[in-house]
Length: 286
Image (cartoon, rainbow, N blue to C red; front, top):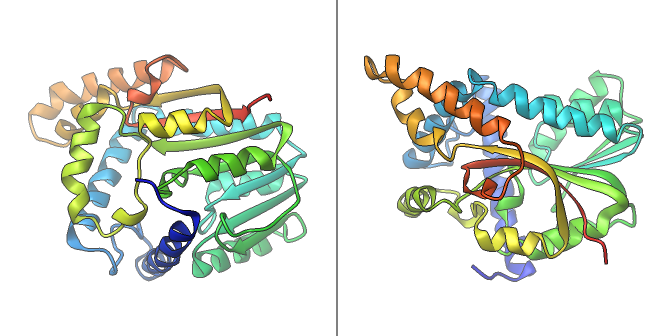
């Protein structure tokens, strides 16, 4: 879907309110805010709960550890540099590691309520001088600063027209700077069909645009792949059976082996056929 920057800014006002509700749900329940978000319909909450169960299954395979190690490796490579996080929400463990490792960290977040929570975390850690959290839209944010590391986790697919986002990211990177991200993908026909079937019922469809072949092509006009890995191409369909009685005894060991093999494959030609990709891109040389 082609969308103007002004249209995306308007959608992001609605998105900010949605993520305010998620932040409130986490305060209220102490659990996953997405699946407990009162502003989301039952289909969206159910889909979120399913994803949470899949993440739980995947964590046993080493995916979560591999992703954290991958992120920490690149944070360490850029230690002492200027870091930017797009969509920091309430601050993750990775966000805090970036604050600690950076010369200065800037976090951008649509939700004012989530941004306030993260500011409190930074203050409590005694890192106020190193970390700044701004409640703003990345597309509207004005800065002359350049960054050694730009991090985005599950954020870059929230733009109907991603090219202005990739173009802006490239312009904000120092010559040796990198973009570090993890994003859901719908290049694989199976995942594309599943997402299309769910899409008419989801509350947040206005800003949910998992990476397509076109998204990747637009990104690589401005950025060049450096490192990464993916998972889910073969393992995601297996994850459906992991929680079922009896079948679990067969499917679970196979699922774990399949995920580990996907992770070990690293960067390869068919990486975008996975359901999720963690990657590092550098600014394209002119």
